[in-house]
Length: 49
Image 1 (cartoon, rainbow, N blue to C red):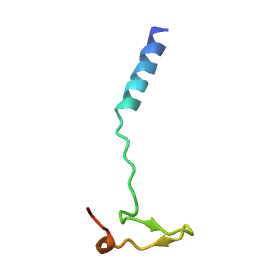
Image 2 (image 1 turned 120 degrees about the vertical axis):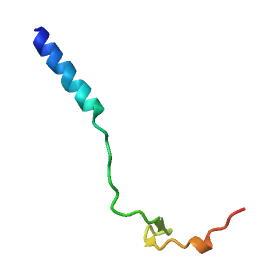
Image 3 (image 1 turned 90 degrees about the horizontal axis):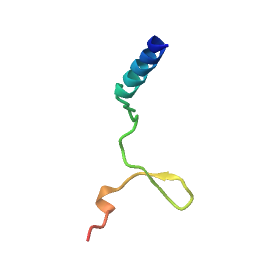
């Protein structure tokens, strides 16, 4: 019984220690218009105040 509990604890600790990383395929900003169509991002058209 103690061995089973120790094994489960070890597996739980190992699972939590694994870093979770998810790679994104695209890193370009995406904008959509009113019709939900993807339009190119125009960084020069951004208005800053």
